[in-house]
Length: 113
Length: 402
View 1 (tube, rainbow over the protein chains, first blue to last red):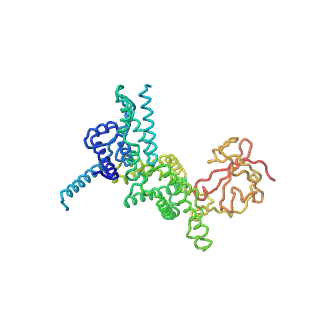
View 2 (view 1 turned 135 degrees about the vertical axis):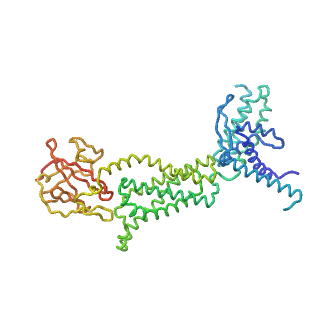
View 3 (view 1 turned 180 degrees about the vertical axis):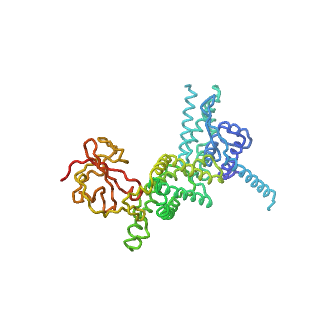
């Protein structure tokens, strides 16, 4: 089935936010490093450039913060990490995602409660 | 630069131009950060590519893996705009309370400075409190209409808004104030008795505008800081309060030396003696001197006197040295033998009276280096309204005038 393009785009936007935040839950990473890690995850198609506007938006929303660190093999790298608000919000997002997933599973199984 | 590098630079520039063009449709504050991040990412990808693999196909593949330029705008534009984060009614109320506190402090600081750190008991109940409520209501409404309780971040636009909101609220207040002071008694003379602002130091309006500006900027800056630091909502109110307190500590630290100096001066000067011995009392907080003295001639005082200095204490004067840095407001004084003068004053031995201001200023005559000098108490509003010790004009006798 050919999926509606807008639906895919909207779903991807929402998923990328939670994916990136969950990735940052495990430490601080620079953009290039995150892209390499995400590319290794099967079925999670991400275009390399997509990560930067999302990180910018998450920074503006106060969920992620960044700082530059000198690099031995090139220009200074910008590292991203979760803020306290980001950690708090991620907990809510993951819980919400679990509930939605369960609801979809229930619907797929024909359980309507 | 190798031919591969040149080709890569050309491809990269073209891609970045497309991204920039796509991002220009999104008015997001971080769109240039995104562009810079993408540039660094592309540089990293190219440097990871072994020289023998820097083929045109591989270079284009890098750009294809980055995704189309339109994705950047689409992904950056998602979600609520940063400056219009919805604020709950409870949060708005808390922010309004913080603004209210800052407005009270602004007015309090303005009075304190206008009254030169003196006479707290004189102005607090009779002037400060009656003015506080209407001013607070006006400012809270005006700043509310400008959307200051929406928790928006500090920016150049918000700074302009602070300026405008400050001016409007103070203009409204001044308008109402003057209406009450001048128009109301004309409508009904009995109103004059209930409006105690006859000698109100009007610089308070300007000071209050300035302090309001400083306070609101501080609140906005603290708000922006906590937003950047992503402080949890529960702590925001406390941090803003702490910011207001801190800003006041900073302000007071600038003023503290003056307060201490004044406190020391107050220790030395008995306040009862600030009022002249000729003082007859106070009317609505204004010192009024006794001025109906019989004329007693003083041959040494009669004549024309030219102002040469304006000093705090008589002993500060040095002949030939002007301590006062600017122009002298009082240029000269001519005392006629009958007790009249060339100005609005009358005089008798030892005193020069101003019937309009109802002040009686002492004068002392001293012969210094062969010249006669008059030390004339200058009883301006600083004395009558702010109850400060009068300074002295020093006048040099230039002719006997007879």
